[in-house]
Length: 124
Image (cartoon, rainbow, N blue to C red; front, side):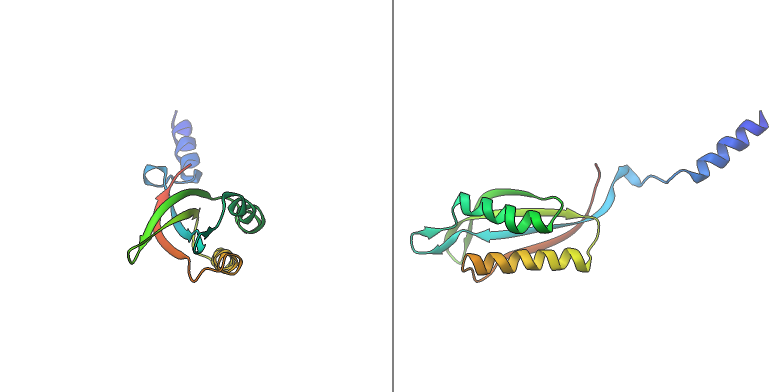
């Protein structure tokens, strides 16, 4: 009996320790891409789909996106929001996101892309 108890104690010491609530630290990044290019012109759904395939998917393992409506200084603009959740801030993740932003600005003649970075916890 004592041996069995010692074996259970020894094996449990080797088991990975679960994080509280099963959640791991993550970084969430949200990128806001305006769709207006000029008067009466905008980034179409098909142009966005090509951008996702050629630029975003080539640099990121996973992401979520949705369409949105935003306003800045009194001007309303349709937008795309791209959300990326990754384990930690790293030079490779940062350079991938900077490249995505740069290519969107270049390809669609945009002045800026809003980037919001938030620390949090997530579990799968």
